[in-house]
Amino acid sequence: MPGTAIIELNSVNVFQQKQLVLSNLGLRIEKGELVYLVGKNGSGKSSFLKTLYGELQLKEGEATVAGHDMKKLSRKKVPFLRRKIGIVFQDFQLLSDRTVNNNLKFVMKATGWKNKKEINEGIQIVLEKVGLGNKGFKMPHELSGGEQQRVSIARALLNDPEIILADEPTGNLDPETSLEIMNLLVSISQNDKAVLIATHDYDMMRKFPGRVLQFENETIIEPSPTIPPTA
Image (cartoon, rainbow, N blue to C red; front, side, top):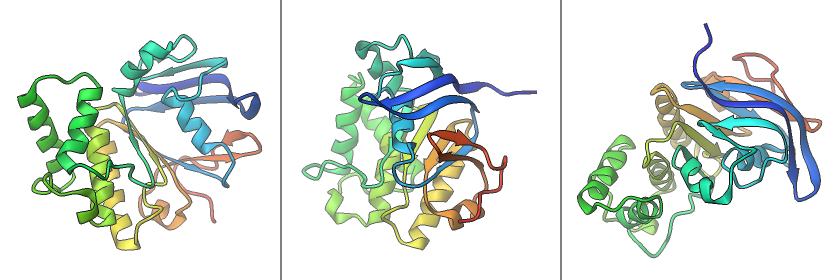
């Protein structure tokens, strides 16, 4: 019996400006799924992710993401979609001039949080989830790369999103730290959230099996439900 679809695409074409990047996408992703996006640079992975979080407008086809009809998504409604999606970047994208706590506070205020006590409690909850409960006073440059990525994941969890989109989350990390970050992302998916990870790290995919979406020839194919293709 199928679960709850959190992402559903039918006959979707993805454009970067006027150039067709991906064509005729049909896809259903459910809560609790761990999904890898693989393919060469320029194969459309980032454009696909940008379409899911509303950075690229959907012009052709039908798509529903976290309950939002992407064809009808106005600019005003993008922030409401973003509250249901957490994004983790390869280069962390932390604000270097403020502490970890203030990085997270900035995002919470931008997504509508107002109560100071609730903001502080929310920050502590997500930092503890990623194992950084006592690092909120640190500046980003005082943290290791792995710790900075943990902060990035904490930031993605602030609004208790239904979907996590991670674009090369272990790309700048050493193998041991990459394992820690992947363990964290897998545990998030086991908490009934869809986790999509764009990656080139096939070794990591074998350690943490998941569904694989292969980007090639301007479309997406599924080589196998769980086993990643050989590099």
